[in-house]
Length: 563
Image (cartoon, rainbow, N blue to C red; front, side):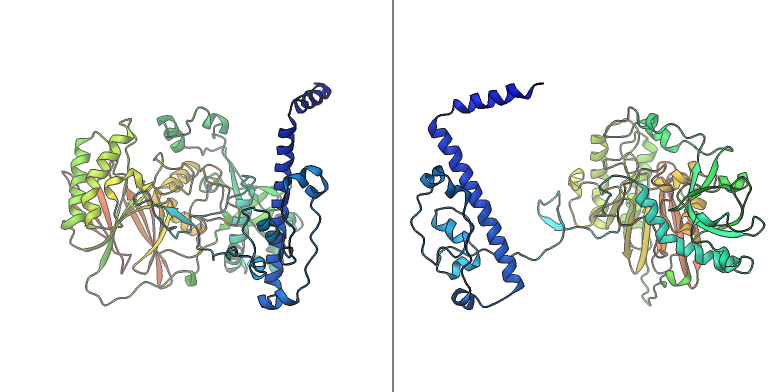
């Protein structure tokens, strides 16, 4: 389009303005410019006062009055007519803020203007920061944000995931190399432990070297990512989405690669070795380069925990031993009558029939049924059935897959407005994953998505073996962000385990399983919590000795077991 007609149109519109309208426009422009100049000058004077603090009375008597830059508005006749301010005294000319006060504006003057005799209130000093605060749904007032390592994280401005892998490699490569040296120093010389992948061919093809990087598994059965998200609604997860999230992806045709900040190389391994790993593990590989340019692997190791990274177990002479109750998959909203009866038995048991001192109840995902019964009815059922439990015990509820919160990890806690009958301090919605300290025990876990995703990318025997592998790799969700949705974090990878938790749990599984992973005088109790709608049971963990795990089952064939 020709720009000339547009210019002519604007000039024609400008010619239609009356003299009074033109005068008002010029007046508004002049006032806006003066306000901006006053703000800039006041800010400059405030910064100067902070750099050179001198007594106000001394400044008023000895400081020379700076000349104010002539305003553009004073050069135009319109500005002279629209600024009928009287002549200023020397005191009034000291600051632009004082000049504005004399001109009849409402701009708050600086402290210097109050010293020179102005009767207006001086500008208030900046208040100290009180940290990020949120509003609670039950009271409308603000309360401090819950302290958890998975909340308030910084994400990448470009929304890219390469930085997440970079942070993961930087945090765990040193530990992987140390573990490799401890295991292979007798068979690999010092120069054989390479700093990056670029030198894996430099050594002789008949001598072994050790390389460290992040694994990437090329899954031949993986569907197209665009097809995976095509037609997915913004809110909620359909049955199709649920089946896609649990579908197996690994096959015999998969290949494994190793990457670092420099390059990537293909790993030659047996089919069983490739099947046991997935993308996202920081590992050390021992082997040698081949003529084809690949790397033939003879052994592997993960950045394991060291004994100094395991906090000591708590000691107490108190006869009253506290316990933590773990439940998952309560499936409120389900039409299964046997499930409703078993759930009522479990709630009654946790309120007054439990034979141990119950410190807290943790519901780790699966709160609402996946059936198409309607979320509104499920919320009403959850409110009414959990109200007696919340009145008697402290209940912490985590979100899970397909529930009313964000889909990617970390998931935000449920909004309190969803549970209007549970508006007490003993009800605590929690994020997923969740980390907290209870009775001097470090507790860490999630609602099951990382374990489920690892099982569909790697051939592992059971969910408990997948959870143990995550602990051994010191990473809570190794397949994120490749096949498990997460956010592109900027400063660090929040899923890295910097220390060994006393309890590591995963919710929503078909069967109960637990194993003690000793580490020096301490260790970690790995627990796969069963989904209640699949196996009605509650897990009780001794908070004085996490090796003591007890299970209470419900229903017609209810049994109690102790490990």
